[in-house]
Image (cartoon, rainbow, N blue to C red):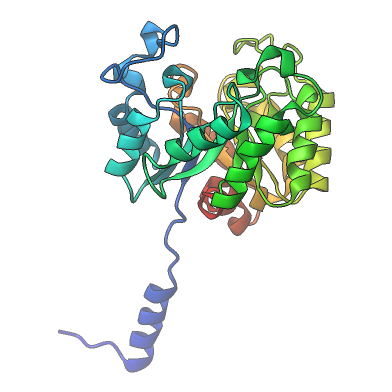
Length: 314
């Protein structure tokens, strides 16, 4: 056996010890469901998003193919406020998954807060965020800063106490939510995360399509808030919902650059919007798109977007 000279041996050891490991990739936005758990009335998934596509097992297989290491599962609307299925998935995958519970703002303030605490107790320490769906508030309440009304304030108080970031879904358009985002961020005791690029679409609620038009004003408002509030974060997720192109969604590159300028990489995070993304290019293509968007950034900035920000928050 040939022995290396001492200097060569030390150099070899140093090279081995300093070789960086791959930074963990975190999918910060996805849903899972299964027909083995009862869906809420009227909330059954479409036939093309059945168990073979949308179950926890299907998600695990997608992650293995895509090279995704960790994930934040957002409670799906299919179960409304029954967190049983996702709680079970979280408890079976404690080392890999965390969850974002769904708040119920249809109740009086105290009852809504108590129900949120009960939801989080279904998987202690594994529910690490709370989703505020603006369209679950009574229609009569949806004006001004409605996410910060008496019910919203009570829910946000629980989030602040338990150190749970608030995720905001802007499916119906970002602009009407600006007063709410301002009010939640102004509290200063809770982090706020906006889903899916803020849904900056000229036709809120429209299905993915090549005819989608980007709402530049809404996106500008979002970026302005990002510069103003250090506790505001953005998921660059579900590209297919805001892009007029198929993967790799190159039309989003200038918007990505603007988001980095407004938020900084440490307040941005990638998410796929599984299982819907599986019908729109797939999780792997979504991840590769963000890798391409961020290719000019420093490695530490790119790693933050691909996983570091989500790991720190959740």
